[in-house]
Amino acid sequence: MFTLDFEKPIHIHFIGIGGISMSGLAELLMKRGFTVSGSDRQESDLTRKLASMGAVIHYSQVASNLTDDIDLVVYTAAIHPGNEEYDAAVNAGIPMMDRAELLGQLSATYPVSIGVSGTHGKTTTTGMLATILMEAGQDPTVSLGGKMASLGGNLRIGNSKEFLFEACEYTNSFLKFHPSDALILNIDADHLDFFKDLDDIRHSFRLFADKVEEGGRLIINGEIPNLDRFLDGYHGTVDTYGILPEGVAPSDSPYRYTAANITFDGFGCASYDLYRDGILETRVKLSVPGIHNVSDSLAAASEGFARGVSAEMIARALSDFSGTERRFEKKGVRNGVTVVDDYAHHPTEIAATLKAALGVPHNRLFVVFQPHTYTRTLKLRNEFVDALSHADVVVLADIYAAREKDNKEISSADLADDLRKLGKDAYYFPTFEKIIDFLKEKCVNEDLLITMGAGNVVNVGISFLKS
Image 1: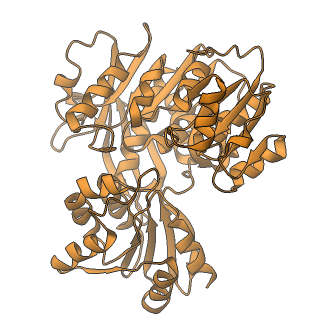
Image 2: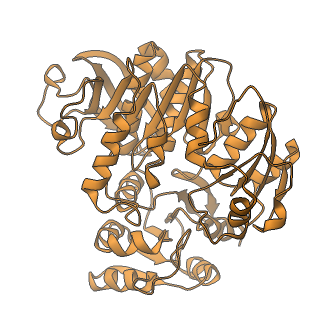
Image 3: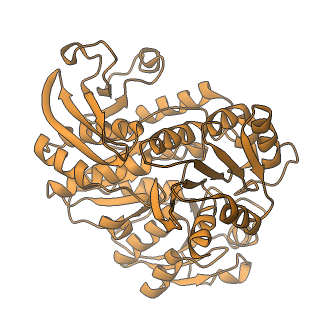
């Protein structure tokens, strides 16, 4: 295993440098004096920023990208043997590591490293916690899985001992980290192209919990099913959080941190009383919609308290937090139609987003959904149909393959058929152009349009607004 000395900068080449996490790591290393080059399939704002800083970026992944002065190659989980650039690095004997290994080694250089994990909500919770720590003047370094206006992008380089990052479970990447504190937001069936089933996923999350350093703290959602069984034999410090169960007094809450007396404003943004150990700490008013953001904010607040931040600062920071890019992000209005974009690509996330949409004044709710990966769509087909059925009109785009190839076992047209069998107003179109034409004809004043998915479906909303 290649071990980096971060005090001795070298030349690192990133295969897949345009990824949200990879680009952040590349930028951070450049600011530490490292020479950076890399490749990606296409140009983006992230690659252009790196190029403006002096990185050499190639928009193809071929052997000739590898120069003799490269000391280390870092690659994403989507890069495998058979990729020409990857194979050339192997054949040349250049030391290699994946993104997670680099992140793990980097996080180990900070006295306090905080890993935020969970199948949903990592980016939002990390953004909330970053805002809390910045409100308290703690000046953390933050690696975010999305863009956030107050960070100026997906990375913030601070001057304190704290490093805050997202810990992704895919391919067990988070098992390469040793956080001083860890958050587990939820554990649902996802990434079933890698994990066997939910029990397999729970097992990996427990292994991640065991990675917390001695003297550290695990903050975990107390609403996770069978939590006692999940934590059986765990000897570290554990704080739980959760929304107060109906009919239970705050003093009898099963969670250390809890939200009670929740109300919503006209745009679905919640206010709630935040309790710690049964004692009222403060009233929190969120500026992002949906009950799922109450849960995420509790997780962030729990770690904020653990880091010594006052209740008043936590409440102020959570109120100031306005969200991250592609998380219920308002893109604009066209002829009275409000367009929102959301990254939701799992049934649980879709359901949460559509529930949040109920708090936004509208006539009909249109959802343009782009499923993400064939494996996820096939294995969670019924769950996707159930979640999408809560919209008034559903438009399906082709499945975004990402790292996969079409297995011919599932298609977006199949989902549209399933929805129509339930009596739902559902459509499938093979191109974005046809979807936009449909929206221009059908979306009228006061309708709410949500483009949804982890691929490039955001371009539908942007083009619709410009049309």
